[in-house]
Image (cartoon, rainbow, N blue to C red; front, top):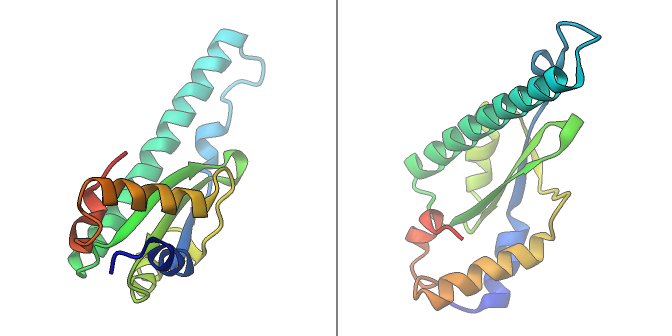
Length: 146
């Protein structure tokens, strides 16, 4: 199947988001009256730690999807400040949502993008695959990067 609108509709129907809550201990200040430079360093360390945690969860979900034979999917990580992180997955096969729900990572639910347009994202990725000659090879979608 290489019909872009049809593929986009399927991927958007199978759009799921895994929410990873913010890890509060990273954001708790050891001293309330830190100088600005020390506070900035502390917040940069907190952000790096959270990003690392989110990417570990993302990689774990990828592994689960690949181990269960799901390779036709797109993904995107979205940081949402005090709300934590959102790991978005657009899957060609609806049964991939079971893998996402059973991954024991965060809270999985219906797709909910905050800082990007999901439809535009999916269409852009499909066009990239089409230009690369990989649109008709869904078993290789997962490893395609921007």
